[in-house]
Amino acid sequence: MESTNGASQHFQHTIKERITISGVGIHTGKFVNMTLVPADPGHGVVFKRVDLPGGPTVKADCDYVVDTTRCTALEHNGARVSTVEHLMAALYGTQVDNVLVELDGPEIPILDGSAKPFVDALELVGLAKQNAPKIWYTIEHNLSFVDDLKKVEMVAMPYPEFRVNALIDFNSPVLGTQHAALKNIADFNTEIAPCRTFSFFHELEFLFENNLIKGGDINNAIVVVDRPVTPAQLEKLAKVFHRDSIAVNSGGYLNNLELRFPTEPARHKLLDVVGDLALVGFPFKAHVIANRPGHSSNVAFAKKIKEHIKKNKHKAGIPSYDPNKPPVFDIHRIEKILPHRYPFLLIDKVIDMSPQHVTAIKNVTYNEAFFQGHFPGNCVVPGVLQVEALAQAGGILAIPKDNPEDHYETYFLKIDNCRFKQKVVPGDTMILKMELTAPIRRGICEMKGTIYVGNKVVTEADLVAQIVKSTK
View 1 (tube, rainbow, N blue to C red):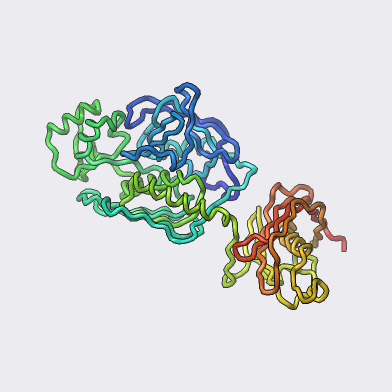
View 2 (view 1 turned 90 degrees about the horizontal axis):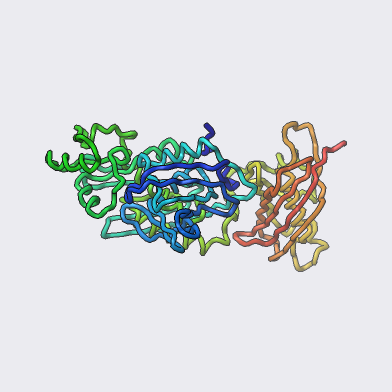
């Protein structure tokens, strides 16, 4: 079985092949066949009602949520799909970005009441990395949501990863106050996905009378019994569940149920938070803290996060530079990699690097040698040298580093789409970001380069260079 949590966060992913899952919808009681179909980059998660004329679709987006009564339901163009939260959590937790979900009914199968069956199916087929970058959005400042009536408090804080904490308190002697945490998205499959939905015994009569859990069964939900119940009530519930009898165990749960985790109810509420926040529609990084969350609050908060991201979308991908953090490479390490020397070594340090990108720093001072002859009295960093600085940053990424005795040189082959949007002057700190746009083959590197000063783009270009082993 192939793990999906190791998916690269730098690229979009779909599934390697089609997946069909069948089961009963918990609220409608209708048997549904659901097929997950691989989709192109940028497609996102889209639901398609193949049982309706024309096969109408609805995108997994908080703007299309029409109901949050005991589940999250989407509707658009005549396509309505209910109970999407567990599947959405599984897709987000396993980092599936693009998939078409075909349904021949109105509701996602409930299965065992958790996200684990979906995760198991996704891991079985595995993910396909797509040749398209995955853009992560960030929270610029604390965002909060408060519902005083329901005593709900939610906050999303700036954080370099996706992290969630959830707290539940139903004034229940069985559940007590419970806390759950997802410290890293890589832990979702094992720590959160297996946790099942739950309901209180005293709610069941209301739910049945309102036709909300026609597909409910003690095998797909945890039933909490925190109030006295009569034999007649148990007998009535047994008939509804098509059982000879049901009983309450000493822990306060029906039919001697064994919890998968001591805090399984809280972890399931966290699962719902992940699934509902996936409807933001943009992958984002933040530390989310949810106190007494529910579908209504989750969706309202998702809309608030989406609005924030849309307002600050232009800032996505801007590298953060903290001069107090130790660099990945200092100037001495850079000298061992690049052949350039004064006055043509144009990067001072490397602050971030992965197999697909590099971020370097160039501090511009009045003492730069080129200012003597380039617009004397009007100090502007020449555009050609900005592009050269980008190329040197790209060289740091592309030059092999296996053997320190080997030396390489970098030569331009092509520069396209070069734009200079703002002057760079003494006192500016140039943040140079280079991203691979294609795998390196035969020493040929295709990269997209961007220079930032603060949070503004000053220069960008598409560069093609060749890495050649030095013969000296």
